[in-house]
Length: 315
Image (tube, rainbow, N blue to C red; front, side, top):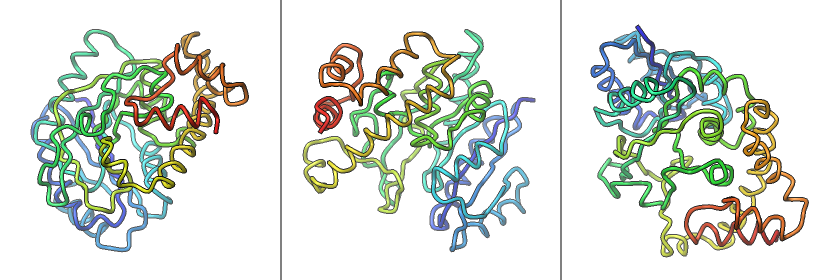
């Protein structure tokens, strides 16, 4: 019997984590042919989160709290889980969403379909329904709401992630390669794994919105509209500072990725990553060529304005 692990990172999530765990367990009932487990890592919560998880464990041994020591943030918490779990398939989960009952069944059917076509590393992700704190839908598609690219190539993924970790799942072939990398030094685990799957395996997208992605004001990474009105509601200075910082981080991440996986990359991908890393030390025309002819840009004109200014022009 093949094994599925759902890895859940928690921190002061007592208000919502019960609903999330219940929704995951409901998904388990649709997969009787698999051995399913829910593995939790807590980042030293000060509320009742770990007590809730331990209570669930007493009722259902498939739920296990691996550790409740301090990790230092959502990235570090997920990196702990990545290094401490193994299964044939691994699903990632946030603490405050709600999975729709058919989520895991649709993912597993797609995994089987793709693996029958060709073996190798696979990452699957789906659309999300953006919801308010009470799980009332606000927008049926986060990809439409944020104007995200459903099928980005490596050039796009290198500078802008459109794979959301809370609707991401990987097979063992991809997961094992990620575990042997320095994913803990990346910008975020989902971004790094998306680049890896695109470069050496396959990325599959399921059009259905399979979770209610709860927005409640305390999200570490939430859903923000890509509309002009939404952009104007955010401090201009704040947006500029953040845009400049993330571009610089993509260079560091690209260099890290190149060092981790260079022998496994196709020559054209290896060259693309190398050229991007080196372009920061070169002139405007080198960066403009990458932007205009090799696909190194983002999706949507609003995102590309700041990317052009801070990367191509180099301000």
